[in-house]
Length: 599
Image 1 (tube, helix red, strand yellow):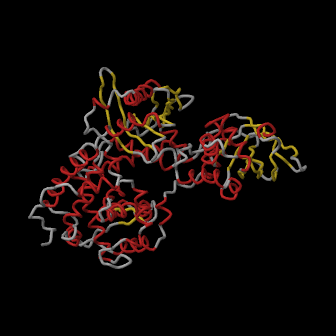
Image 2: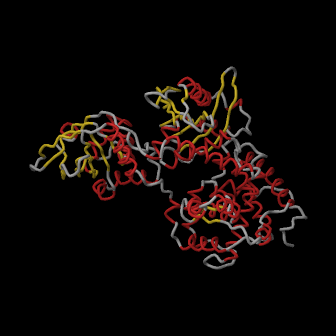
Image 3: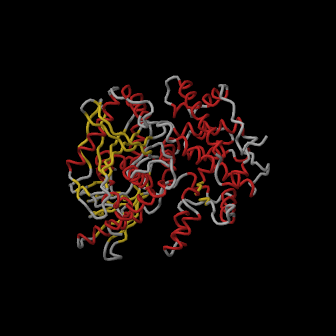
């Protein structure tokens, strides 16, 4: 795909989301720049460059200084923080952005971080500001962050030698500054980028040549070898060259806390001898290789020039960071399998294209979430079947249960072959009627009065739901959901979406927590009386029920603030004690005129 096509595809994605949200009042961020930020951050999350990002618009003056923020992401243990600031032009053709403009936006975001770290911003912010929770996190946890990155996101192209700016120091911590322009995003999502000229001498770093199976001259473009690299040698290489050794890799190292990287870390600590058996290994490209003799006289790799790890960046960086955190780990027992591709001299453009293709196909897998691994569980197959065969009461529309990640998009690509068919499909199954597996777990656990688990986040809540599925009680009383259970699941989805639209504009911060706890309170107070079948039949909730949700939402918001005792509400909401305390509080009596409420 050409860069301009990718740009237009990205802009089309922004406009499609924007249009969908304009048609659904109360949906988050119906503004072009915020939607662009969301799209860019999600792309970065999909290729493994950041964590679970959140859009967070903040644009203000503090004294004479401008501060700005468009979004953020941090790890569960809050040891790594990414901050985003957008520079959006709505361009449909490639446009250049000046370094000075990018620098200015980065400085505004840096100033937000600096003022928070120096404890000079939080006290001046409105507590209702959506950036208030992040400011509180930075003020309280700044010393705990091991890595902080600031990204400027733009739909233009930065014509500069590097997309990385000089790092800054704030309160003794190094802050990395990077630009994610449309060109760099295109490389990350479709190809990779050329390597630096790096020379690694394995006689120096591992004490001798790497034993290998050498396959020379089989094709015109490259030679080939299979080898095994000592863990200590790989750690040394990353320590010496850092991210430069990974620049042809589409994935930057995220965190040792991710599921895959945590597994790498635990294997290094407990079973280092089994590392090679458990690990898929690396794919390496190089410009030149010298083949010598290993200790037993077989071929061995003496040195590599232009070495780049195009797949296995997470493994490489995890070795380094795990050893740094746990110095007692013995990496001499660790071996990492590697496939080596040595490029032959040829036309530079063809060579770059080959490197891009190798990088792209070596990294062709999408980010796999834990929920994706459960796609073939009988529960999700059953719910998927219900969604495909069950029409709304109007006989036209359907709800879509996305059992496999991306299947909703595939449906439109497969069946929306003409503009007319695509329009009909979007009318019958609009984005507002799509439910993912984590959505399903969220709706059911909210109604099951487990708001503290739902507040842990989509993936953790989903895993908790699946781990305890045998204990879950369906409305029908059956072990597997019936068709009526599916319709009541949809009713709970309608309730959640309606509550979200009502609560989001009313409160500027912690809307998600307020929504979750309000609906769990509704289930506690009225759950046995709410006619979910009526909600399914009407495909909406009554004005009286909306009014009730708003009344209790205001009361829940006050109770969350008062019970948190100064703690950040989003963290307090994850505690069992939070829900326990809320249940003991007094709330206003329910309205008497709610049609969905059976006597």
